Image (cartoon, rainbow over all chains, first blue to last red; front, side, top):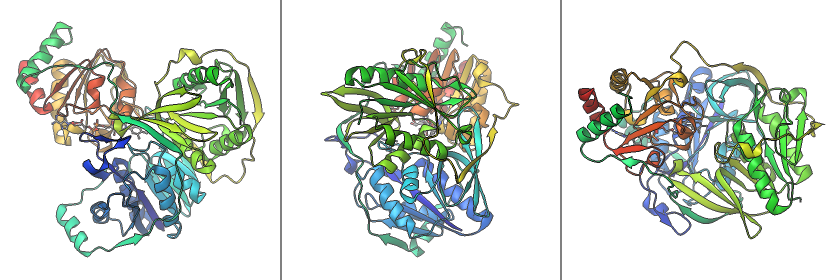
Length: 251
Length: 315
Ligand SMILES: Cc1cc2nc3c(=O)[nH]c(=O)nc-3n(C[C@H](O)[C@H](O)[C@H](O)COP(=O)(O)OP(=O)(O)OC[C@H]3O[C@@H](n4cnc5c(N)ncnc54)[C@H](O)[C@@H]3O)c2cc1C
C-alpha cells in the first residue's frame, strides 16, 4: 500500500504575526507544521501498521526549513520524505496543491492524507484541491480510517458527536481532523538519529496555477469589543475573579 | 455569465443549518447591488425547501443524494454552476462546505476564499474579508474572474434576513450519479452516558494550555468548588485527556452557560462557534494577544495554574 501524506509548513500563530505590505511578514515569523498534519501523519502510520506498506511524507519547502519537520515525521514512523523546492513563503494553497499533486502522481498512491485545514488556507485547503487535480474522491473532517482490499472506511464528523461512515474505493484523498489515536511522541534522541541517517528526496516544483486572489490588506481584526482586563499578580487575578463570581451569585 | 448568487444550503434530519439562512440573507444584499438573483440551492431530499427569502430556490433530488455524499454533492454542484454560471457561489465553512468549496475551485479554475466572514461590493467588484491565522488576522482580498467561490464562517451574518417563503423548483440531478466511488454506510450518533455540557449553568473550560492529562484534575477541583462542570476545546479531547462529550465548538457542542471560565484556550473561530453567546465569559491566558480577549467579557493575562490554585484557596 502506497500511503502518502501531503503536509503544509505554515506561520506559527503562537506569536505575533507582523505585517509587511499586504501580507504577513514571512521573514519575521516562525514556521511550524500545520497542527492537523500531525494528526494526518499519525493516521497514515496507523494505517501502515494495520495493513502494511510505506508512508511517504511530501511537502513544499516554502522557507527552506522543511527538513526538521520531515525528520520528525520519519521519527514518528514515516518511511520516506520528499520536499518540493518551491522556495516561496507566500505560495498559496492552489499553488502548493498543484505542486504536491504533480509530485504525488509519480508515487502511485493508494491513499493520500492531508490535514483537514490549515490556518493560512485563505484560498481553501490543499486536500480537496489535490483530490481535484488527481481526480480522486475526497472526504474531510475524518477522525478514523480503516483500509482493506482497495477500500477505505472513514468516519466523518459533522458536529456534536454526529457524523457519518463512508466506504470509498481507493485511491482517495482523506482530510484528517484527528487520527483514530492521539499522535505518538518521538523523543528528541530519535529525531536526531533520524536526521543523521535520513535522505530527503528533493523534487523541483512542477505545474503552475493561480488562486486568482489579489490581496488588498492583511491586518489584525478591528476589535469591536475587548475583554475588561483584570490586572495584577496571579493571586490578585484569582481574588478578583472570585469576587466577580460572588457578586454575580456564581460562586 | 449572470449576476446571480448561488447559496449552497445544508440540511440534516430535515432541518436547515443557520448558516444556510445567513448566506441567503447576504446573497440578497449582494444581488440588490448587482441586479442578479439570490438563488438557494438545496441538494438532497428530506427537507422542506420553501423556507428561504431567496429570489429563487433550486431543489435537486436523486436517490444518490439522500445522505450527504461529498462526491455526489460535488458533482451536482459542479454541473449546476457550470450550466448556470452564477457570479458567486456561497458555501458554509462547515463539515459539508469544507469538502466541496476548494475542490470546486480546483475543478473549475475559479478563485475560492475560505474562512469568509464578510463580503461587500466596491466599484462593482467583490471584496471578501477572511479570518485567517486562527482569528489573529483578517485578510481583505479581491477575487478575480467571472465566478467566485466563497466559504463562509457560520455566524457571520443575520439568520432572519434569509428566512422567508419562496417556492422551490424541483429538478433531477443535472449529472448522472453512477459509478460513484464514495458510498454512505451509516449515520454516527453521539455517545451518551456522560454529563450533558449543554445543560450546565457553569462550565470551567480548559484548552491546550492545560498541558497534560494530569493537570485536568486541577480544573476538576476548581469546577467542583464552583459547582461547575469541566468542558474543553478540541485539542484536549483529541489528546485523550477528556471524552468527546466535553468538547465545545464547531465540531463539538454549542453551549450557552451563565458562566464560561476559560483556562488556556486561545479562542480559535471553531471554538468561538460553540460558546460566544455564553452569558459571562472569563478568559485566563498567558498570551495577551490571544483572540479570546476580543470575545471574553473579562480577561487576565496570567498563568492558568497559578490562578486556578489561588482561586481554590479562596473558595
Ligand atoms: C473542522 C474543524 C472543526 C473544529 N472544531 C473545533 C471544536 O469544536 N472545538 C474546538 O475547540 N476546536 C475545534 N477545532 C480546532 C480549532 O481550530 C483550534 O485548533 C482549537 O480550538 C485550539 O484549541 P486551544 O485554544 O485549546 O489550543 P491553542 O490554540 O493551542 O491555544 C492554547 C492557549 O493556551 C494558552 N496557554 C498556554 N499555556 C498557558 C498557561 N500556563 N496559562 C494560561 N494560558 C496558557 C496559549 O497562550 C494559547 O492561547 C476545529 C478545527 C477544525 C478544522
